[in-house]
Image 1 (cartoon, rainbow, N blue to C red):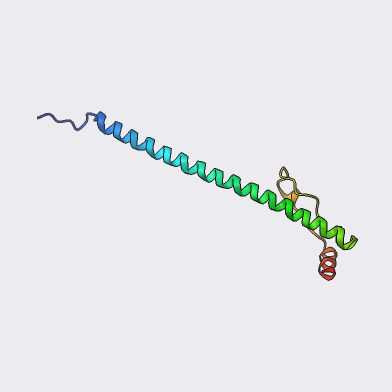
Image 2: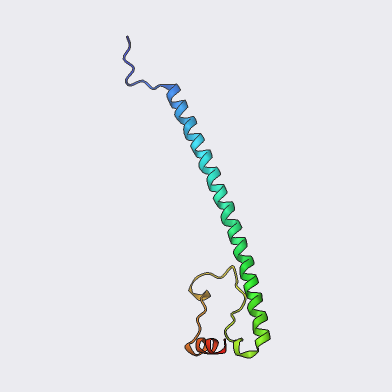
Length: 100
């Protein structure tokens, strides 16, 4: 009888490597599905932004100059960070609420 405690078992390593390969393929597939989902969401929100901007633009043109200072310029997908945040002064907010 031979004592094989410190010898490697090739078949066990091959099975474990195949198991790792299967797990990696499943994880890759799951992440690809998630990426496709997020891409679809980004596209949907881009369409929503364009639609809302058009609605605001139409409303401003219909109701005159009282709302013109409130409507921002169209959203730019490349803008990021604090400089892309638009705030309204207290008088602009009050004017928008009173005009509604």
